[in-house]
Length: 587
Image (cartoon, rainbow, N blue to C red; front, side, top):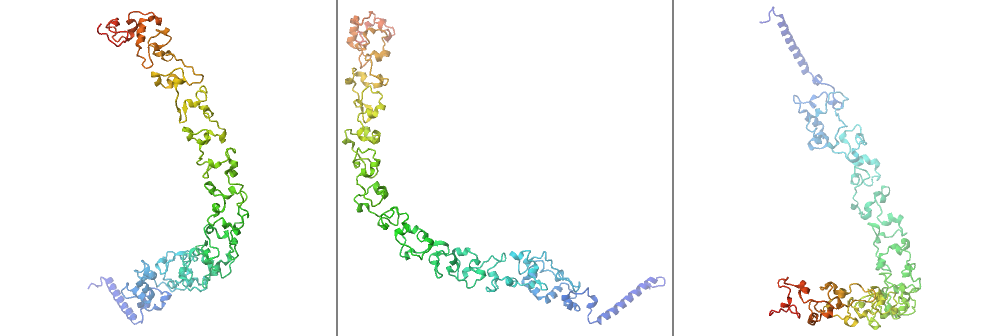
């Protein structure tokens, strides 16, 4: 109703729609009449590998289901499908591939020559394959082309060593194709072959040698196992080819010899065990005849220079060359004791151990070191074989000078300085002159005062030997109280009391005319005790003292007045002249 002459544009639109519908119906009818309509909607040519499916879209595409397309891919690419389901190969191991649609990486319809694999070799991780690269395989020097041939799929590359390394097999196939049993990918020459699994396990030094040392030119089969096969070239024994090196040597070391010498005619004992083989077998030529007599080896160090013959074992033993089995006590007339038993033979037998010595007396050998100069011929009377200086047992009491006191405790050389014992005088000053503080003023008879027990323990009889007998308090004094200086000249001592007691004189200058004879009043037992007869004589006969006396007691006794003047000066009212301490109370 709206199509009116007034609105012609609306009619045009309607006509166009109808025409398009008609054309569409015609085209659809034409299409439906075709055998394959893929040619109509094909976006572009397929890759050469898929060209056969170019007229069959259903081989790769499912109508209205894009996710099912990968299943169709795997229907054809069965090995890839197996990798994905089994977790092997690149498609089964790569965490970024196995869950993706195939078309994500492999886009087609871009031409016959298109590379739909699109592999970026620079970032490809070979660890996601069944052959991770390690050691020398991971080196950039190898490159993909080193293992992957042109025109072959990458997954079809061989993984066995022999497939690549066959041309460099130095064994020429003798050891099979399992190279990994011995070699490693880190370095071709580094092997890990277990030699223990062979008929010749490696022990000792054999473990340290390289394979090529035994396997010449890489020939490993039928390698001889006898020692001489390898070591004949450096065999210092010049042995025949049938020698059994293992009878003496061990793999732990060529120098470690285990030969049992007891199996020979000369078993080794004591010091011989410590000797090296070369010590007896010159040049280590063991098959040559080696002498078994001592002189065969020890001729060069024979200190007897052949004088004792070649039967060394008559005296010496294999324990030690120095230790001899010769019995001097049994085989000679001179038994060895003390130091003699430890002396070397040549110490006495200067020219020949069988030399007959001139005598058996000590002086026959020791004259040269006799410090007594021949004065004492019987050495044994003092010395013994334990030692020339050990326990000298001379009995000095048998001489004219028996040893007592300190003399018995000193060594012989203290008195016998030169060792000439017979010339030593026996008076004290011969030895003690330097110790004589009297400087000879008291004569040479030291024994009159001193005794041998101790120089300081002396006995001197002052009463019989001097003009001043000691009595009373004088007998209690030591010598130094009066003799205060060492006597260096003739003895001169004052015997008057005042000579020693001047400082004790309470009388001052009184009684000087008494001649210093204090003993007229005093005694040597008690200085303060006055002789009774002296006091009486003093008061009754003053003319004997040649002094002028007064009758007043106080004139003399003022210093000894214990009353300090309280009773006056008439002392005689209480005291008498016989004794000052006797009080006369009756007066």
